[in-house]
Each structure stands twice: as structure tokens, then as C-alpha cells.
Length: 126
Image 1: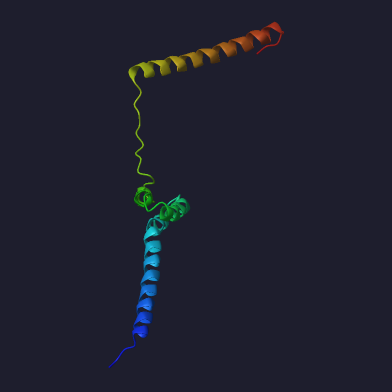
Image 2: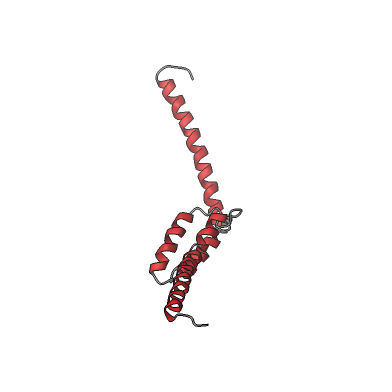
């Protein structure tokens, strides 16, 4: 059985084209993984992650690992995972807060007295 060499060239070219198309699709699929993660987690920046994934193609994939991390940072149940820490006031701050509240009370009393004096000078009864 004799196979024409020209036929083998076309078969090789066909295999090469199919493999090239597959590799291009694979690279695009891999670069969309962070976007898919962000979409699944309902990430508020998913569109930015998607655009950055395309930019990563032109930057020789240098920012792609950071996109993966960015997509995983957001948790739909907990948000960004930053704990809210309640800060206890110091004794000095507690004293200042107490002094401020006392001053507010004194101001309120003085305003009432001032209003009373104004009413008396006008000849009105409060």
C-alpha cells in the first residue's frame, strides 16, 4: 500500500490546525477561570476581573495569579473577611466623654435659664 506524501502533508497540516485551535481555546478558557469563580461567588468586581483576565493575555500572564486570588478573596456570606473589631475606650476617653455629657447638660440648663430671663424682661411669664 502506497500513501501519497502530499496527502500526509495535508493530514499533518489538518492536525496542526486542530491542535492550534484547541490550544487557543484552552488558553482563553484558563484565563476565564477567575471570572467564573467571581461569577459563582457573586463577586462585586467580577466584570473588572473578567477585563483584567483579557489584559493578562497581553501581559504574558503575569497578573493572572493575582486575579485568581482576587476572585477568591470575596466570600458571599462573609464579604471580604475583614473582622469588625470593637475598640474599647480608654479611661482617659471615658472621662472626656463624661465631661462632654456634663457640659451638654449645663448648656441645656443655661439655655433654659436664658429663655426664662428673656421672657421676664419682656414682661411675659414663662
